[in-house]
Amino acid sequence: MVCTLKSAKVILKINSAIPHPEELAQLKAYFNYVPVLSDAFFEAMLARWYAFDAKRKTLLTSEDDIERYLYFVIKGVQRCYCTHVDKEVTIVFTYPYSFAGVVDSFLLCKPANSNFETLTASRLLRISYRDFMQLADDFPELEKWLRIMSANALSSVLERQKELSIFSATEKLEVLFKRSPHLFNLIPDKYIASYIGVDKATLSKMLNKIRL
Image (cartoon, rainbow, N blue to C red):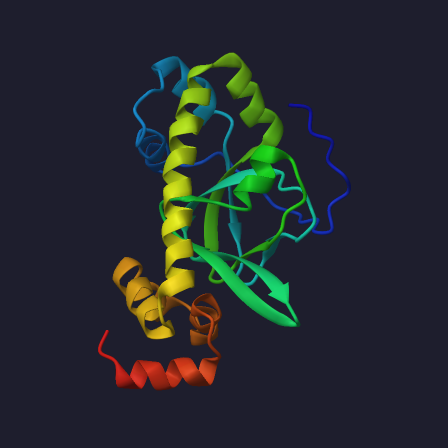
């Protein structure tokens, strides 16, 4: 796919560095969640990633920009969010060890429908669109990996859609705590409130009433 990238709203001066060996080991382990990739692929792929550190509240991707990078989280918490009627709505949180960024924008080369920012000081690895697609051209096995990972991602999206459609705010809070309990100690309550669709005051009352 040929992707023409327009000028980005967000232009960051990031000092990229070669990742530490243990960081690349975490990345390789995550890719091996779907064990279809060859040693030759990993040798080529791991050399294409770069590491960088970002301060808290760094906007990495802006809504309507095309996502230029696929990220892998080494440290910290991030979120994708959009703005609706002057309200920020958190769509997803990311944290170690997982992919991050506006992934559909990256893969489809289309304007992002959300923003991507750090909520805490973070360390991330990233690979450019050009390098990732070159790997896909050079190693057809990556297409199979993407197909399986996309199916898993779709399953997660449908599960999240079920939560949004039928769960009460209290049930959403309980599910989030069960899935990601560490978030409650790492980020301000307002982001959790925006994720489950209530205001901060309502969340405070909920936290006082239920046992997590």
